[in-house]
Length: 292
Image 1 (cartoon, rainbow, N blue to C red):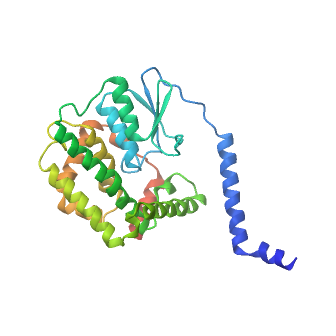
Image 2 (cartoon, one colour):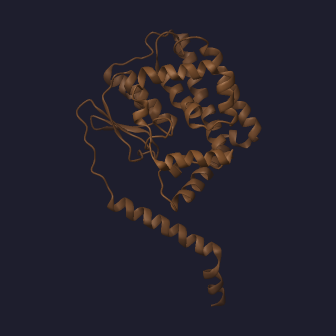
Image 3 (tube, rainbow, N blue to C red):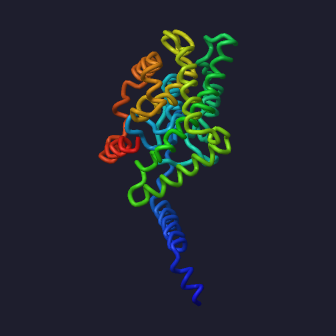
């Protein structure tokens, strides 16, 4: 009995109860706030993604990549910003004429096939190979540098969408997931300085290849431009001043900043209307300033 009292009074037991309560509450809320399934007109994409970001239309590069592709390819679409996950437990994903497709790249490839679209038709085989190499560098390498940059200052954008007192719990869970995933990837085993160097070198490579071209591969936009806008916007607009990646972009890669502004003007004339505008978002950025 004494052991039982000791267990019941321990901080770990209380914490476990608190976590269990949070999980139970979440399940109940989800159970009674289910939304009706959204039905789109024929040949219209339902794009499932997180809510909007405070400085860019998404807090994640991949929904912004996919939504930019839909605009570039002139495909009609409707957003579902409820945060509903795909069968793979990830976002973004889409439904198109009753078919669910997960993963931003698979969505693009599916729509290319279904609608006979090829935004890369003007590229040579060599240019397509270069574009793919830069895409993989950006999505499989630079992406992790961005995530780790936020983990170093203990920040997760999930706090914008989960109300206190759950936001700090969600933030800790997400950051722990980032660190564990990056460790499994391999890049998380490097020092903070080494990760920052890797990210900076990726930015310099992008800047060097872009040069003074209007778009990444030349005078016409293509799929790689969707990838780069999605990823690099997280640095230029969402990352606060003072962090190494943001500094490298603003100081050494001015042409990249100009390129992103061109992409925004061409494909996102309604950019400002697609931002998260709330006191919560303003407070979030005020908090970021004190973490750097």
